Image (cartoon, rainbow, N blue to C red; front, top):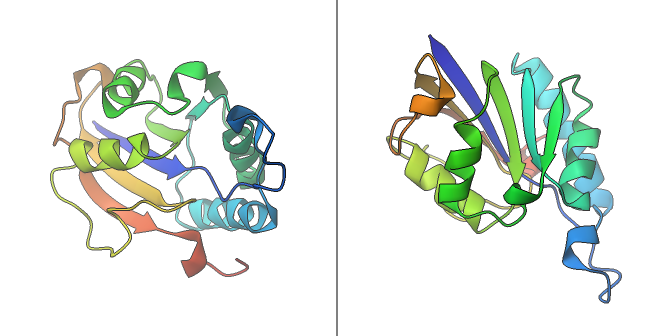
Length: 165
């Protein structure tokens, strides 16, 4: 059986309130447009998750809301600025066939680099900008058996490549 991971960094957040706690920072206007465009792209590509693992931060929650997907979501403090090992541990407990994970840099870029058997040929993969989205397939029956370097990249996109952003 094949499992699909959609690994998304939150969309662009606002820095308009410098005294606001980092966890509470919302999306800015471009981030909101990016989330909508990414949701449209996922639907167009037929990439509809049946499970969402989302950091508990405001900007990741708002990114998910902007995607307008109808999938059960878990909001996890453990994904807030998670390192790659923590992200692998969280993913290993997933049950869905197509899982969307929304998180933060630098952990998400490190996780993406380590989980794949080769990098996608995209110039922005290494720095994983806001809204960047990787799609990877895994030949496994169960997420608990995935390991580093086991994912096959099948897509990578950044919001600026999408209409309306």
